[in-house]
Length: 242
Length: 219
Image (cartoon, rainbow over all chains, first blue to last red; front, top):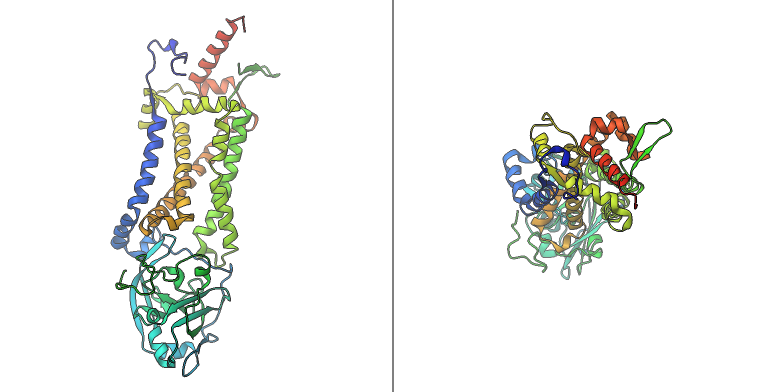
């Protein structure tokens, strides 16, 4: 084409550069660099500006709201009940007031979704699951804990040892305010050492059972033990990852 | 070859043939579906309700996977001659064209069929299709990749989505403010006077090509 192109009228032949290939490759390389180093870049930006500003930046640290049913169950603070049952000495129904009267735990962690997005510096407040289990009394023969949601679709499960980790909480406060409906409020589970899908939203029931019952996401192919570092066994020698 | 007299006696030049027009509108439709499904996926918390998220995800996924098809189908095969020629035009730049970009459109230029800004737009959109296809696939089949790469793919997919949105928006604004150019993506042709003003070099090439054809009575 360039050899045939009729540029004879412009006296000297025009030199042509394949700009297309350069720009195409340049953009592709930028994309590849972003995939390779975007994670660290975001960490640096997130640390520099905090998750507040990071949340505003395109591609920055922001929650993607997922719902299995396509709806958010709306439960008021007053009507909220958490039913604790199964292999326990004292089956109990807890209200918001009951939960808030129990020893409070708070910490700040990075929320990491299994699909890749993450939100650093999320503040959490709630009751250690271990404290609730102690409160109701776990019977001999119990080996796992199953969780139900007010959305009537999601379920989750942890071994008893996982459930007793100190950063596994029944959370009623998140990002410095009561947990919002879209984030699973008024009360959700937060399993800090594992991927987000383990942190069931709109927590309605805790059942102590004799074996792990794979939950909704596990039945859809996700690992039952969703440790953030990729450990697949039920125990992780180093769960402090975030 | 592509010059013909219209009834109104304005000389017409074919700017986009049928295949190119079909490819453009197929491509535009896919981009619009992608943008409209991306909004609730990205701003999920924005709307208060999630809609049938799973359905929107599936539409976004399958539209995204077919995004490269109009370009590929219109390029390969005997029907893709004009498309292939235009891709070459878009790729190969003269020194004047490069300078036109670096001087932000102020330097003197007798424009090709597409001006350097349009060429840059085309190349960027082409490369973006590849980047979005790769990063989008990484997000869909994320189990094959480390968490750090998944985060990186999310990052790139988001940033490019914003860039594409801005570029597409700019493309539409430019099209609406250049009516004759806009009409050519519907009816295919532009007038000679338009070409004289906006694509002088292309017009000369077409005229020379026409003369050469006329000089070859064997054809």
